[in-house]
Image (tube, rainbow, N blue to C red; front, side, top):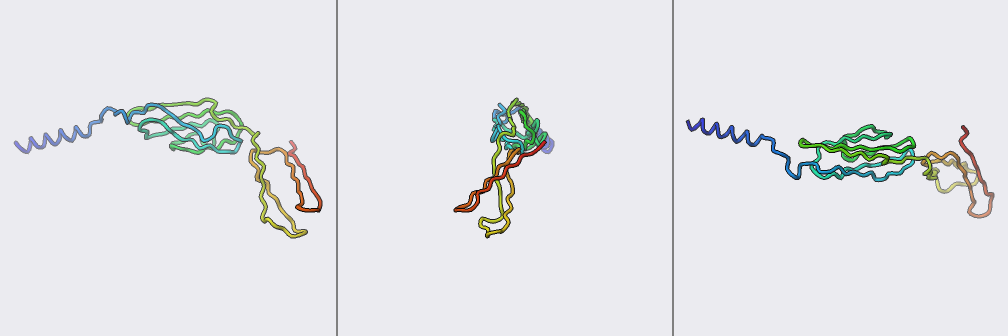
Length: 166
């Protein structure tokens, strides 16, 4: 009889421990909050998104219209935008108790107008008559270039211009 009592008591304790409780105040997702590290970029640039939502989140589902990733399940994804336009971002977060969704419409603005000129070369010092190769590393998809070479002292000043023909 004692064994049955202990067995019944053990079974009751086991079932009580495995019972799914109602969500606590800390576990419920209260609000979806996210940000991108930038919202206006040039085509080809990337944005890192971060979730700042309140509550215990176990799943993330991001949707990026126009992004290099259509969706992501990471809490802080990085997404590249290659085509100019205005794009929405949606984040759905959830746990075993509830889920919440936030869409920010017209959140990301991508354009070509943010051209940043830059170039690279192999060395800083060259000898007379040595060939120098410059490589354009500009961002923002420039459509025309103007190079100006100014000697430190004396010598010939040289300017070059060229454009993309369509």
